[in-house]
Length: 385
Image 1: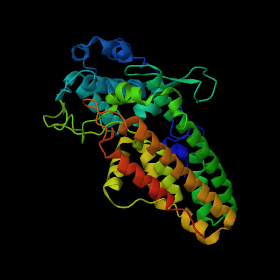
Image 2 (image 1 turned 45 degrees about the vertical axis):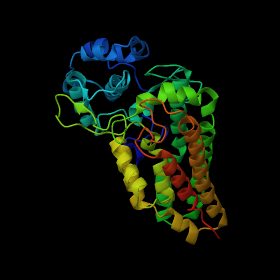
Image 3 (image 1 turned 30 degrees about the horizontal axis):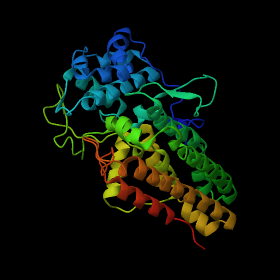
Image 4 (image 1 turned 90 degrees about the horizontal axis):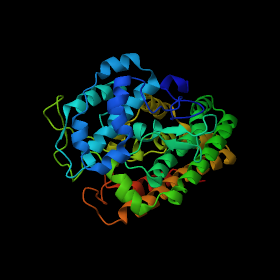
């Protein structure tokens, strides 16, 4: 099993092997659709954004896909993702229809990426950063966003924390083939070496997550960052969904951007054999995989099929390896507990505002109950005795 087969980098994990780019390099696209989107922090203040977007040309994305390279295609996907959400949430009330000039290109483009035509984590975080020093690391202090909605330090910080978490997770992801192979060859020494790397990476991820409050204020996040990443499935503000004009006369229902679309924690659950009950939450998490890049979800499915790590560690390895395994499980539980704490302060504790509900997550779920359940299910997988 090679990570590269699934579009995953041993050095960067689920972040792209290339640094994301701001423009596609296609002159007509960059001068019209691209320029308006990169200028969203200014355009959204004017109050006439929908009229501006409705006047944009309808681009031939099939032609562009044939001539652009992968970073440029990802930039185009990010552009239409942000433009669509700016159109829907940039003015009130939200519309019932997405105009054909952006709906049809977006749907065709999303089909190429095998993801729904809506803003997802891949375009919001994985492919939305640049290094300030091109030779420096992918970490806070040396990264900034390529694309914003309103801009400002709180929006930048919220997303960049996720980008650094992805970078910190990379060493753990790189160990997954080793863990699978070591389990299958019944090599406790190799499992121990890999689990040490995983534990260290998880510790780093948690440390980065705890920095969220440094420059992202809960009040600002709730009112100036969160409103633009909602979707139109299980959303009380858009119960009728959204019609993609020129594509289908029936309304479509897609979930909004959410960290549940990151592959990191589901992947670590898979390799550590941390299971979740067959219930509404499990159904939702499986749905979230359709919003992931296809290579990531294919790798996740393969790891779930192959991993027998927990049973092997429990039955055949000594106390040192069992302790390392438990350390990894505990780190995941701690990560989820911190996430739950932030969800409570950044969303649940806020005063509900218009189309921005506090009881439903951007993915359209009762997030507090789900996060608590996830935390508890993680900790139940500690090996006792």
